[in-house]
Image 1 (cartoon, rainbow, N blue to C red):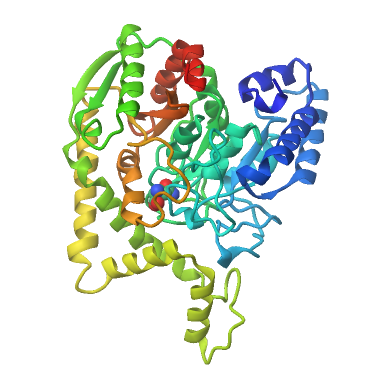
Image 2 (cartoon, rainbow, N blue to C red):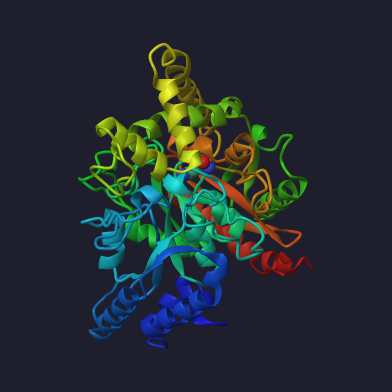
Length: 488
Ligand code: GLN
């Protein structure tokens, strides 16, 4: 096995024992990038020189004998909607193709200060709008498990890079499922923390009341390791919450005896692929056999999650994206224009892709006078009902398990002609963003060689239980899960 294929947890152990050095891991990752990137297209920009500098610094830090962060010397890829000082941050869009931020996002600062090796900026759906990574202005990323299929979106590049060994850890963002879905499709692990757990400072906004930054890794423990680095209160993000920060990685308690796991009946209904259902239910049975108590629950308002999500998210997006006017950020059209309105029109027509334009129009419409009450306000009311559903159910259970996606990773191009069909992929994930809850995608098997993800949902700020259940499952399923990889 190459170094680039080993989990962050194991690599960190080997680094600490000085069996390997960060430069070796980093070189292994870049060899893999050279080998696979032409097909996978997981990166918008690679930062090899910076990575090697970070690696050498990390190696020096080990030599001092001082205590270092667990991610010291570990390669980390960053989604291209997080600002990186001096490195382009395109958000997958033409309109920002030349944008070089003068500052780092808080999470980027934290990764660098902890000794993380910045591998590059990962491919994504433009402005994080999409479920397949096909809306990137820089060409789609592909699923390393089967390159004819999508890696999921919008953080498709981050998930694909981890799966392909083009990085070890990655950071993504999740507004309606954008970490969990690609993690499920690529067979890696991904966590969306509670809204407010991780700073959004320097994250290019899509829908500010839903956006949250999170982590990808090869295991639950890998994600815990990265989460420990990136979470915490930040006074530069007023929605980040000043709450005790647990030490996630060190305190994962694997005993799941007596833990109450809820199965929301509405998340296992018609429309769910049979193979996905079977794999998720097998995982639930494994947990039950090992002492978990399985309880049927109901989240009746979740059936409105997609409708509410696409009203709230587009409304917020239409406002957030108003800043791209050809003056403050990014490109300005070189077409002739008569006045400033003409300049805005030319720049925005040229700079934004089809899906982004569709959402700006939808969002502007639902916020417009005369329609605001009927759409936006109503959606906010139903959002409150969806949240209440979760609060009520969490009186009876400690966490919940659902599928991440109703379907297996689909082929490139398969859903592009039908946006509604694409939106339906978020059916099990968007409700968590509307409620602010943490959720994690963990591989629970393969159907016809394609990965299936299960979603573990926790109470607000109880990522610990999510990690505990996920980690326990991973250890129990172990090689069985991997055995399915070949379809055998
Ligand atoms: N697929 C959803 C969308 O298209 C979610 C995206 C996300 O979480 N950023 O908006």
